[in-house]
Every structure is written in structure tokens, then in C-alpha cells.
Image (cartoon, rainbow, N blue to C red; front, side, top):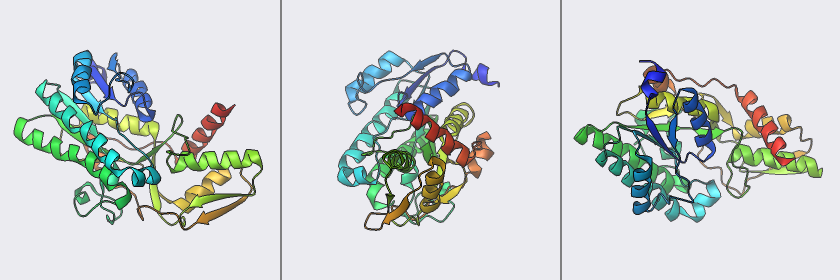
Length: 315
């Protein structure tokens, strides 16, 4: 079945479609011939409110829901508001999938988070290891709330034959990311720190932790491609990682961003600050086997694009 044929006449509702990943997913789906995309904005629909969910479904009348919406933040935000991260993510996901099943929405694509993995998962993270321990404490409430969508998808498939799938993207980065210092993730935070320090002529920048943890990052356009492919081609119960297969230490990442931004000062590590999960890298073989997805963007190339975009927004 060709892409155009699959998407022909489909009404697709993308929660979180106004966000960072959502904007790229919409572009990807339009290239695939999707013409009817409904994006519920936070101003019109509070997705933690059940009445608003009903109203959104009345307005969207979707054939498919791609549920990207999430209440997210960095380590600091998760430590300050664990209850909010748990409740908001659970309530905007679980009731929505239930209502989608009740209303006969033909497919539900749930986007999880790798924060759902146990703190000490063997590297690389395999989907079969998801239940082998408790997640890293600082973001466990968020990670577990999202993981309930996997439990729900599998239960609804088993009992009702409902076609809900669950994807686990690794940390994303790319143009249009969130650069707010209070809530941004590591790549935009470091880029902003280096660019601003360079503009002020600072002699040093301070990074959190000791630089030893490793992370994996997926370029946002690659993530959008992975989600679109899964929405089109994957109809199974198993959770699927979406990643780049490229593990990098925070130290190497920071030094790379310092080099690419051209910051010439000192780099100092504040070891009183938390490191977060010790290592993160995904086994990405399942996505390739099940729907032919493999990340395409080389890491430094992706970083260069983000730095260029950020500089272009400042001026």
C-alpha cells in the first residue's frame, strides 16, 4: 500500500501538534499527502480536563490520534513538581485513549519517553528491559505516567482488539527547540549558554554535574519520520524505541557545542549539581525491523543547524 493511499481522506488529530516535535511531524505528514490535520491548542483545550477532551474529539472527529502532548521539563522542574508531572501526563493520556477506543478512532499512536526506563538499564536500552526496575527518581513520576499508556495500549489491544501503538523517542534536538533557561533540555541550554557567554565576552561557562553521564539524541526531523512511519506501517503490541544509536558523554557533548559555537573561554563543571541517569543509549533495531526506520542526520550536522537557527532568532 502506498503512502498516499494510506493517508488518503484520513483525519489526523495531533495533540501537542503546536509544539516542537509537532511542527515537524505536521510538515512530514503533509509531504505524505495528509490534508486534514487537527491541532488542539492549549488555549482552546486543556487536555487534562475530561470535558475538554470530549469537546476536542467532537471538533476533530479523527480517524487517527497521534498523542504527542506532554507536560515536560528538565531535572530541576521534575524535582520541584513531581505531582504535577505525574497527574497531568496521566490524565491527558489515559482517558484520551479510552475515549478514542469508545468513539471508534481507528488508531492511537502514543508517544512515551525514555524516562520510563529503569535507572540501571543495561546499555543499549532494549524494549524488553522496560519493566526491570524503577526509573531514575528525579523524573520517575513523569516517566511512569507516560508508561501507563503502554500498559493501556496492550490491555485495550488484548481485550478490545484496539489498534494502539507505543513509541519511545530518545531526547530530541533541533531548530525551534525550547531555549528558555528555566525549562530547556541540555542541548538548547548549552547552546544558549555558549552563545550568550561569547557575546558578553565571559571567561568561563559552568555546566551541571561532572560530564560523565552519556545520552543519545535524535534530530527532530528524524523523530518525525519515525513517528509517521510507525503511524502508517506498525500495528503491533510491542513498544518501539526511536533513537539515533549514537551514545555521547555530556562532557563530549559540551565540548562539541563549545567548539561549534566558537566560545573561547574555560569550561567548569559544577559537581554539586545532579548528573541524572548514568547512561542512556537505545537499541534501535526493532524500529528498523518493524517499519524500516533509521535515523539519517549526522550529530554534528544537526547541532550546526540548531546553533544557526538559534543565532538567527536572536537577531
